[in-house]
Length: 121
Image (cartoon, rainbow, N blue to C red; front, side, top):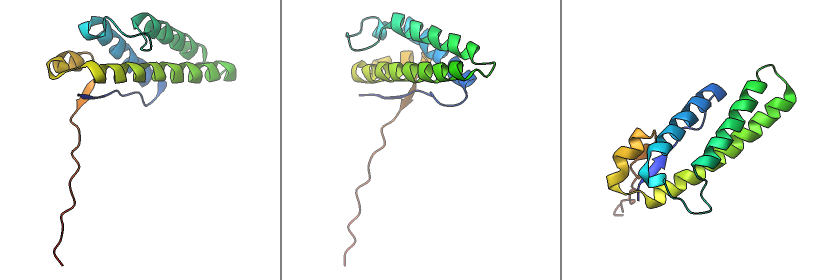
């Protein structure tokens, strides 16, 4: 099983550009063409992304209501992308590494836990 990572932190402008990169990558991946019912599909991700963009643009003037809506839209989009990430981790194989990297996902090698060395007394 591959361990994948997304960069969903930082300022809203950085977050928005990263999410656009992930969406464009997902739309070209064969691995993400068919998803189970519990995993958001491309249409849902696109709708959530559009909602976040609208609230992002609306909150530029400092309106508190729009800022609250932007924060909620960002949380919803982040939760959706994390579900997609977990799905891809469960179905991806070593053969899919190149496609995942091109889609913007970071493939992380799992850290190996070191066993504590027994020190003789």
